[in-house]
Amino acid sequence: MKISSPYQLRTLPAGLLLLLPLLLSESQNVVYAVPQTVAIEIPVPAKDALLRPLDKNLVSWSIQNRDLPIFARSKLLENLFKALSTNIATGQSVRLGGGESDKTTYGSDITITAKKFQSGYYGAQAQGNVTLGPNYFASFKEKYAPDTRYIWCLNLINTTNKFEAAISTAAGVLEYLGDELDLFEIGNEADFYGSKGYRDSEWDASMMLPEWNYIADEVIKNSPNKTVRFMAGGFANPAFQVTKDFDIPGIISAGFQSSRITWYSMHIYPQSGCSGAVTIAPLLEHNTISETLSNYIPQVAAAESVGAQFTIGETNTVSCVGRPGISDTFAAALWLVDYVLFAATIGIRRLYFHATTTGSYSPVIPIKYTLNSENYTAGVLPLSYGAYFVSEILSFNDTLLVTQIEGGNDTDYSSYSIWDENNKLRKIVFINLESYNSSTGGTNTAVPDTEVYSSKEARPSTQVTVATPWEAGQELSLIRLQGPGSNSKSMVNVSGFTLSEKDGLVTSNLVDTIIKVQENGDVVFDLLASEAVLIQYYSDVLANKHPTKSGSKAANSTVSGVVMRTRGANMSISPRLVLSVRLAVSCVLLSALLLFV
Image 1 (cartoon, rainbow, N blue to C red):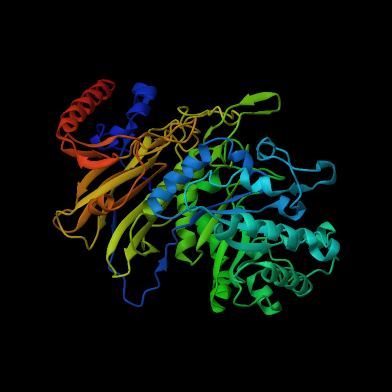
Image 2 (cartoon, rainbow, N blue to C red):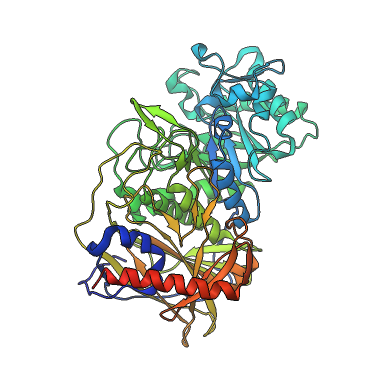
């Protein structure tokens, strides 16, 4: 639905306390407006309704194998992984793949030190090779959150000595990653091999099959327990632009079907940064997301027809390391939430977001670097907060199922209902993709500056009323993915939750706004332009672990009738903290209200 109507002024709601730093910075220029009320009903789904399961690793990561040691030089990625994994109660899934995969060789006698790998040494650059040895694995092992799992992409381009590069690399991976390895891929974006001259111009899936099978057979033969599993596909062209038979139905027909292939994948970037113009607008259009991803429904069906799962094995906002002013903005965080949830509704189990050490589409920048004679710092980018918000959606002890809310999706607005296996509504997600730009948070020292601009009109807000099957009086938690504006590069948070720009540790704990289900089952809340909201049982929040600032305690406060509960390492509410937090919040609220006098 398009959110638009005549504006109506209103006073600052207590629910916006978490945006007070933004209010203080924008001073009296901030005026909020209320469009027409939106009303949506969420009926209990029929028992035969198709609700898709939410994979705990719905948001996953794709990193060039050469880059992981450099990420390991700082704690930023490790601590982001820990925060995400605490919520989802399982380790992160990392695909070590990309263009460098088909340039990689391995030797057990290579003596390059772990520290040198972390320094950015990639081997014989003149020949375009990435040369790995045992210390490569030592450079990053045990430096990430517990239970991190890996997918390794093997070199299919190099045919020398019967694919020795791929087979020797697999042996090293099996020896040093061991049980941390989930899957092997063979070849990266092999649908381009013919056009790029790596294979004959007639190259197709039937020609690829014997090479792929030979490598897979040798890898299994050399593995300790013979239980190696594979992900097939990994094609560059999107589902609506397939060349020859390089998609999932095509390779299955060509013979890529066996018990050792448990996943199939394709790659997609909504916009190409390698050439041509790109804009921020497509990130804020739900219809664009749904139309693009709906092309993958036949790919999902093909994978499931042979008992496997389908994933987007490499993706992000803009290809070729992203684009400043687009990939490093709050719009990218909002896009990620809508993108992965819609993908899940059509059966895409995981999406692997590609990252490089200095790319503007990365969740964090792990090192200081120089670009075009300008110096940049390490830091956290907004995409991290989109991923964190999704981890809050996924936090639950049992299986969750997702579907779109009928009538709650249009160009600049989307919504999802989350259910358990007993058809009980557990969570509601609303995403307002309506663009709102702000000069606040317009820069981030980790990425290049781009044009800073603000919307001329007031920031729109809508009051949403949702008819639910929930019992009246039930306590609910409401949290927000929020920022100054869709174009902001900093000051992004999830209801106050933030990560340190230095090491990724929690610097500010999340604050749940407590609301209650009304007598008729309605749930009512405000939703700003360029903002996402998650609503769930507060009892479920208490039942799950969440990342918090070290040594912190939970706190409770009530301001203007709105209950705010700050999470802490100890989730029991401290009476002493209740008073101190109530006084502190009241003082800040009074200061903010003075801005409007």
